[in-house]
Image (cartoon, rainbow, N blue to C red; front, side):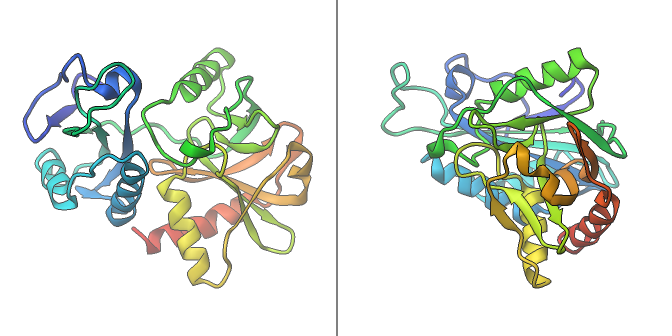
Length: 272
């Protein structure tokens, strides 16, 4: 976020954390990125549920929802459109990698008025970097995101809006910054399983929730590169971009992605 970003650290206006913060030193923490639409935080209930889940997985006490909401609302102007971010670290202390016995978690909230540009469609080439498989941390949006940082750098050097990311065994997982969902020719929705690596995003969860309510549960499955031709449509999604039609991944085209994205937008509107 830019220098114009407004911050609160543990409830106080500030722009610096302690040099021994474990989130800074080791990536020992979690974060969420949230869209702000007309002064409202989009899908707050889903966002907080996922934040609490990830904190629990790392044995970090999650700040109360009302505390985070109050701090965010203190930074959001009426009618504002923009981006918010919540970070929760284990705080300071401990010796080396060893965490403190009684940690004091640190919370950081930030709001920025600038909303990123969103592409109309995505044609994805594979990223060169692969996602390492670590089931213990799979799905968590923790602060160790060097794989994505390197992949976004690759996007810049290749002049690509986004790239498809595979794990070290050759299964497709996500893009550099979005989850992926596919639709087969029978109309069933599928999404890459995140039991080994990857981030379980809130927009993915919202779509799965709406699909289940509609009696069309999203199937989590391993998807090899050779199986992409089994699908007629694909979308890439995150909290800021919503659902974007994917026209192709490498040499595999998806002719029906626009209709899938339109359905996704309707479902997202139901969980706003």
